[in-house]
Length: 434
Image 1 (spheres, rainbow, N blue to C red):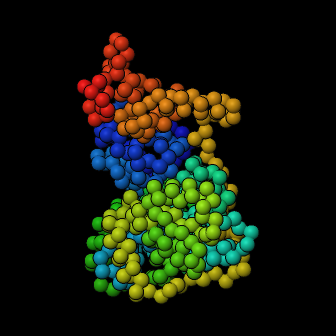
Image 2: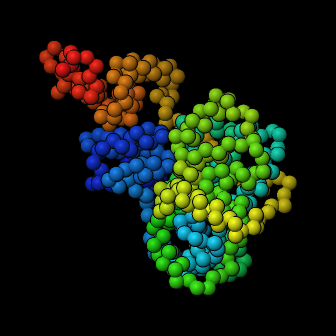
Image 3: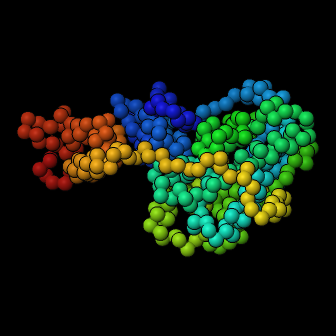
């Protein structure tokens, strides 16, 4: 990964990378290139969605891991399980089994993120009732989507809901309760999120719109799953720790957040390609009749995160099964307006990494040059040059980071003394190239 001031939870092991180019095709922001047989990540473009982790056949992409030794830094340790965690276990009808098992792993308490989700749902309903809000309102719950918007769709920044996600709200409440119940200082209490995805790790370590996170550490679901499953299988008696219902737990899968708003004027999309299509339609003002847009970068929602262990559709079915044993909701906000602490500290701002230049005239000149180069390329988007598409290669050339000879059709090795380019067999259209 190129060095920059950005923190990223997605990492690359160059020793495992085979330069296969699978990842460059999946990255939604064109943040990956392959050069000299190895992939590298353009740091400022990466949104930590984890698509490259999901697609890499050689497991060269991975998420930053945290050691359980982190727990020892605090006198009182609280686990913050994401709702998606419940979908990883078969025949689960009581979330107290999961929460009790978390305590047996070394945590002093387990506080559900789904509790925070129910509170955020109520706040969102209150926000949507204000006529002055720009519609459609786009959920800010998925940090990968928020980062995608600031990189590729800055015109939609005004539409993004400026609320802290359920994870942050749950962490704030968990710390307040722990201080009250234990007498420990806030700094003595460690809050650890159990995450289904990489984007939330980045959101904790380097928040976009907040001065800091309420969460102190994070563990991937797949990293604690074996130990947690073992403890669950050996748990005969549970503690009454559950404090959320259907509304909160339903946030685990696509459509759960929007359904909690009790309106039919919404759209829910999941999977990064579908998210991009929806954002393009919002830009084109084709969805202006809707009040709310829920977008999840992962397929199926958070249950499809790259740090989960179960098939997202199986996990979603398990969440639906679990809902039968739960109340509708356990948490409510008795408010007329949304409290200030639930909003971001700072406004969301564009990250202009796609600009060719800050000077408009120079940018237009480079754009024209880029178009000229792109038109000279074969337009096959084969990826053999190490860029995702011919357009991306043209951009790299204009930025001085690539050469026209990176294209297989223009390499000197493939060109004879008459500048004749023998077209590779799969791309031949006439016998002239035979």
